[in-house]
Image (tube, rainbow, N blue to C red; front, side, top):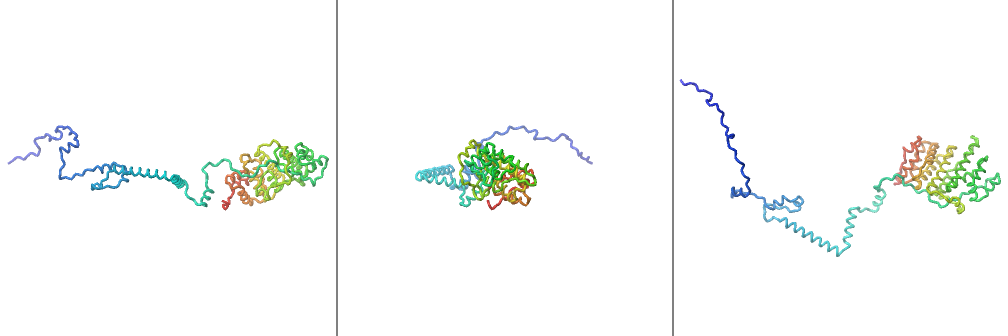
Length: 420
């Protein structure tokens, strides 16, 4: 009977690990391509595909050179093209073209200038029909910054001498020898009465001031400042003095009519169909040199014009304050158009418009049919100027201190598109 075999091994040592016991070897030395070829010659039966010089040059070329070089198949030796020869050939062709161009310019010198002009015209400006060119010029906008000052309109033409203003004394009866002398005197002598203050002694404290004298003083507001200042002072004093001397129920205060205001503006040099449809106001007599010699030292023309206009604005403001119903709604609209056009004069662009703004504000308040007259007013003011910058300055003449003034600013000025 055999003993049972033990299931456990007798040798309990671990198995050997051979890769740990192997000795370390030095890395093999780097071999050159020639050594590889010598040690490992290629098998003649194996087909080796080597990149040709043409393919290497093709891979190193830039994309533009690849696009310009004709496609070459690497498999056919007859289609190989030497890129250096191709570049040399291209260089020769360019040199030949330059020689022909120089020879052509020498034989035909005008050809170069015409070709250059055609190229410039084609690059800078397209060929346009005459009607298209007019349309582009009409609506072209310059790249300049908008000027802070509006361009203005030429309303008042310069005058070297003022127009003569004659006093209509045919219906006046003198009450004193001094008054009789004044009424029978010539225009220069009557102006001397004004400058010397004799007219104030004659009419300032009189019971009734003749209306022709007030009309004459109103016309003298268009004269140079030395005369217009004295005429305005006397006209203002006579008007205020008449208010205190007359009872309220039977008060007679003279206000110039719309036609008289137009004549005064025409005497200042304004000629415009909207200002004076009958043409410029003319007198039959000529201005004498002795009349103009009274005002030898005058301020600049723009300043003198502004002074005269302010005198007119102030007196019209007084008339509207004393007699609120001095003008009808139609006359007020015409007067406002007249005043706004005068305020856009080129010489008055940089000058303040305080008196004009106060007068326009008062005229707005004197319109009876409101707001029915708002749209006709805005339509009338839209024809004062064709320039949008001038229209913007015109709207700014109306202050926003009253509801009616704000109405004009909010409604602005509607533009008739048919005029564009």
